[in-house]
Every structure is written in C-alpha cells, then in structure tokens.
Length: 329
Ligand code: CUA
Image (cartoon, rainbow, N blue to C red; front, side):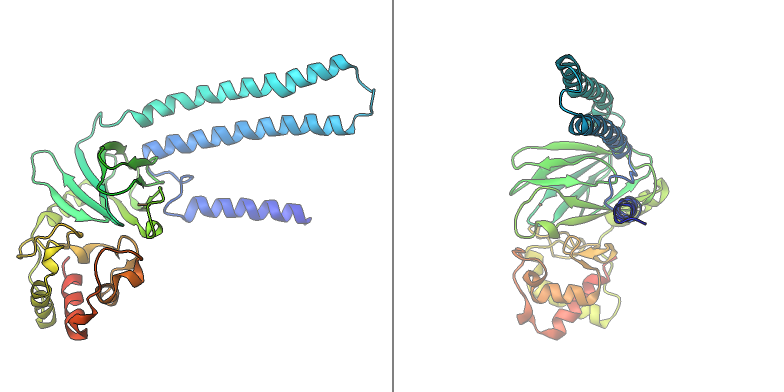
C-alpha cells in the first residue's frame, strides 16, 4: 500500500470510530434535530467535495496547459464557468437544502409534554424538572429523557455565558445571564449520551459535563417518581454517622437533602446523589473514594470549584459522610 493510501485509510477509520463509539458524536445522531444537522453536514460535505474536485481539476488543467495552447476566450469561459458559475450554483443548491432543517430545528416547544429548566452554574448544571400538574423535581448534572417525546429545555445562567450541548441529540444553545434561551430535545432511541458546555466559561470549563440517559416512557416515569421522593434513611451505622456529621458540619448551608434539615441552594441538590453516574459534573465516577476526595479538597479535582476544602473534618467523618451520600439513591 502506498503511503498516501495508508493515510486516507487511517483517516477514514478514525472518522468511522468517532462516528460509532463516541457518546458525543454529531455523526451518530440519536435525536430528531441531531439527525437533521447530520444530514445537512453530509450534504454540505458532498457539495464541498464536488466544488473542490472542480476547482482542483481547473487548477491542474491550467498548470499543465502549454502557454498559448488555448485562446483568451477559453480562459474567460473557464474562469466564469468553473470559477464563478458552478460554485455559485452549488452554494445556492446547498442553501436550499439548509433552510428547511433550520426551520425544523428552531421551531421548538410545539408538541412538548415536559419542561426542564437547566441553569449553568460555576461549574455544574442545576436541573429542575417541571412536569405539568405535578411538583417540580430538583437535581443536578444529569438529564433523563423519555424516548420519542419532545422535551422543552429552558436555559439560564446566573454567572457567565455557558452553552448547553448534547451533540447526539440536538444543536447547542448559549446560556446567557439575565436571559432565558430555549431548546427542544426529541431523542429517537434509548442509550447514554454526554452533554457538554460548548462555550469557554472559566478554569473548569472542560470539567463541566452532564450525563444524558434516554429510556422508555415507563422507566422514565418510575425514575422521576423516585427522584421526587425525599432522601432514604441511612442504611447502616457508618451512614448514620455520616448523616449526623453532614448536618453538624454545616453542609446543609449549601446543599439540600430533602427530608432532612439540609436546605441550602448554593450547591447541587444531593437528595439522590448516589443514583448519579458521576460526581463534580462529570469529573469522577460516583464512588465513596471519589466523594471523600471531593470533600477533602474539591479544587484538586476541579480548579476554582466554589466549595471550600473540608479535610479538617477528619478522615473518619469524611469517609462516613461519603458513605452516607453514596447511599442516597
Ligand atoms: Cu460552562 Cu464552559
């Protein structure tokens, strides 16, 4: 195999791998709007390839032609035809392809049955489910969506500009302080995907992701009911010690654990922390050790995290609090 063929093959394989295996791939769409965007991408890519081939053919012809072999009139026709007319026609054609999906993607909240308010914090996601006719449910850094249903997402920020993006499901929309922006999501298949912040927002911008799980309607309803419940009681003596230490150390000034006196709203709601996949907005997998490390020194895991270090609580209490929080399913 010649070197350039090898390179082309490697590039094709790499693109294929990105498309198939990545939970943030726009080329493997799992939502209605993402599918429109992916289709548009392939039309654009094909159009660009056609224009490139035509322009390159013109360039090769010009480079190889003997001086004086063709008349000035031929040159004018080549420039006007291959240089101006053909690319212009192709670009107009692509615009015609691009406009209909644009309308689909921007016409949100038509048939939605559920609203989710997402607020960009430094640097995590405050999430509030607002099902019609039912009490709202607060959680953080996680979205669960019913497959086949259209969901409105209302986006806000209390600090700087973030950008909400679940590449597998839809396009991205900025979260602007003092304004509410909107987006709708309509997942077409079940699975786990990743949401990211797509606007540089500060030191921990890259450590600001969220988990998106698409499930069928029954499983979604069960999950939302379970998230609406107050926190479970500590399951054993270690968790009970953690529960007491959590309340006595003042953690409730910033965090809510529904069903306990902890009612703070500065940090994420921890009522069902243990049921999430990650701690620190996608920073580490949810284990007792990672929760304990977070309590000791959050800024070792996420620079500029607003939570202060609590290593002064002592190892026994830190591990007990971590066990208690991990048990909050
Ligand atoms: Cu939030 Cu980048």
